[in-house]
Image: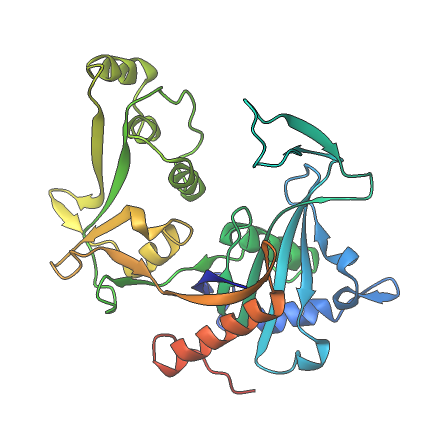
Length: 331
C-alpha cells in the first residue's frame, strides 16, 4: 500500500549563524560525539529531548547509516511520544447494530509510550526536504535541532534554527516583491472563541488547523471581548459573518513592499492554501510553497521510513536539477 505525502522544501536561515554554517555537517559532528562511553549517533536514548518539559518526548529516532555520513545527504525520522499508560478507544466492531459505541479506557502497560506522530527529513548542506506528520510539524523539527545543537554548544545563546520555506507565485515563477498579504477566515455561525494567546506564527498555524473564524482573527488583532460580542449580536440567527484581512506595511502614506525573505520566514509553517498574495498583478492566483506530492509505501497507518527518506532525497535532487534550489549533491 502507498499513501500520497507532501514533501516540503526548507532552507536554514543563516543570517545569525555565520556564512560557513552547514547544518548537515554540524548535525553529523554532534552525532559522532560521545556521552560517557557511547556515541550519540549509536544510542537513540541519548537523542531524547523533552522539549516542553511535559513528558512528551521528541526523539531523533531512525537515522542514516553512519557509513554514509561523509556523503552529501543525512536523513532521519523524528518522532514524538506521549508518556502515559491509557488511551481511549472503541473496542466494539463498527459493524455492530447498536444505539451507541462505548468509549473505554485501554491500558497499554507501563512500558509503552503513545506515538503522537512522526516527521521525516533529509538534509543536504542547509537544504532540507521534510514530510510532516499530523502532530509533528516543521516547528517541532526546528525546536529539536535548536535544542540538540545548544546542548552540544554549537549554537550561541539566543540563536535558533529557523527552516524557511520557499514560496512561489501560483504559476510556479519566482515570487516578486509584494505589497500585501491577504488571509481568509472561515465564516462564523457559532460560539465565540474565548481565548487566543499570541499573535505569532504558531498561533496562525493553530487557527488554520482548528478552523479559525472571523471572531478568532479579530481577537488576535486586538478587538476587545465587548466589541466582539457587540458585533456577534448584530448577526441574525439565520446569518453569518465573513472576513477577508490584509497584512501590509505602510510608510507615511505609501505602501512598502514585503520582501521575499520575510514571506519565506514568516509563513514557513502556515498552509499557503489560506493565503493570497497581491503585488504587481502577477500573483493573482495566490502563492504556493515549493513542495511536491509523492506516493510513499505504508505499513498499516505508518509510512515506511526508508521509502519516505528516499522520496525526500529524490525530490531534493529534482529541485536541484531543475534549478529551483541552489543545492549541490557533490561530496
